[in-house]
Figure 1 (cartoon, one colour):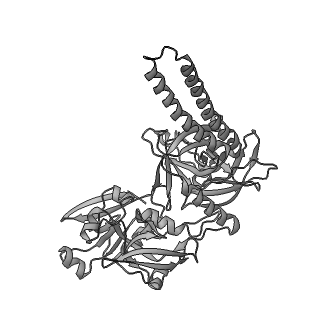
Figure 2 (cartoon, one colour):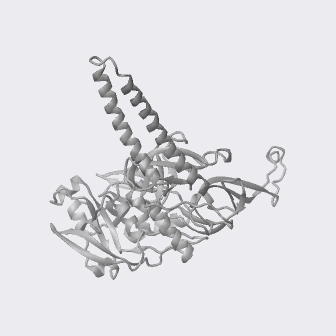
Figure 3 (cartoon, helix red, strand yellow):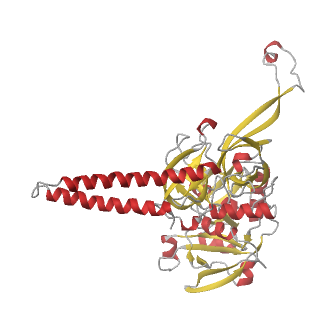
Length: 489
């Protein structure tokens, strides 16, 4: 147990003892006139305990702050110059005249090795021409981009600096709700670099589908603001447990809800980018069929089960080879209970092709387990320094669809005159669900284009993705009424 941890535990013990002394002092006051010794003892212990706590926090900040850096970026682009008076005086619009416009950005990063590798967020350095790192001592150096992974919002930089300060990586898997943490970064401006704020871990396993494809975020109330992105989340051992990435805010500033990428996931991505120049992810080969909540559990005749339903199994894929079947309910992964689809798919993606996992499933009311050897995702878009992302559409949407075959029509009393696709499973944490899409809805159009088969539906979504659309519009039929649902991709 290191000195910092002993100090923290000492604080807790001192507070408990202090409370005991105060109670004894108050109780004895009426019967014993000479209580000066006890009162002084209690006051001394109070001062000592607060000082121990203060010294512990100061010690953590002093040891870790030098490993946090400020990242500034610059992007130069050509913009067309238009004479503002030409439209009023009938002058012809001049073409071909351009000028340079410079866009600047600000973020944070964490030095994690003596080789000068720096962890930060992809969105901090995306689409930039120049990346500059300012160290704790004020020196500025140019940074080389080693690689990025937009699907987890991780980027790796490298600087060439002798005797560079580093931070030790911790174990984010052991971080619990209520744990004390510090956030260090450069909020709002370069003048506020190396700002330290303190809070606790507010929640684990959060998903941010509007930011990343894969994520298992740590939520904290330590103050995080724009500019903190890429900075450090540190535990009481002075170890790095997360990369601060995002905030949830109505004002645009700190509302006490910040999110950090667990260091276990960030380290895995970093090592792949450094060693291979690309990120490889485990592939299971099954498609989402819905989450099992309390209502679904009763409908399936299960005893308060939680998990995910297998919607479809890819023929010849790892899941198929292991014997997983459609409509199986997956309840555990390596003996850990499955909370929701987003955490499950992130857990699979965080493993490497060739890893073997154990799935606990329920099939026809019976519990069983399957061992699956993960493989490489077919035609996966590999994350590189210049990535071109083409993600599995079904996973990106957070829901799956199927054609209106006769079984579906009979079961849900859908007339043969209705054409479209049937929503057979949707994640409650998906943006589509938040905007109102539900299981059993019938999607008749994607961006005004009619779709009658699942292939047509996914093809239209693919077109939207390739066109760079951030929002997609669906025409949905529910209970005989037509409505429109728009959600972020």
